[in-house]
Image 1 (cartoon, rainbow, N blue to C red):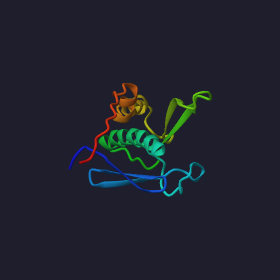
Image 2 (image 1 turned 45 degrees about the horizontal axis):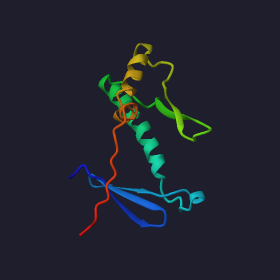
Image 3 (image 1 turned 180 degrees about the vertical axis):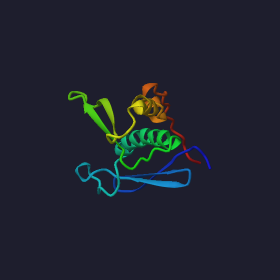
Image 4 (image 1 turned 90 degrees about the vertical axis):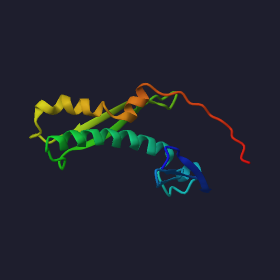
Length: 134
């Protein structure tokens, strides 16, 4: 296996990716000319941030044998009306009343360990290349 992600264009507005043996399908919403047959690429980006945060919360709970049944995580975003870019993310971890208060700060710290979040806080540079096939 490789760390490369191979992208293909199967038709319409669909763009698929192959990564580590998995196929990830994307499509644009109908209002953008797609068929709405799969999440849009930007939706997957947002989901990766939310699920990455979730896996850190889950790992924290599992290390302490705390059941995750009554916990959930919701990610909200605040948009800039002028640029239409995301201005701020809110990651809300909902815990039941009996959840130990002594762990509240630790759960926040767990969310802050998310690798996707860390990459957004200190973004990498991008280089785009054109490679002619032989």
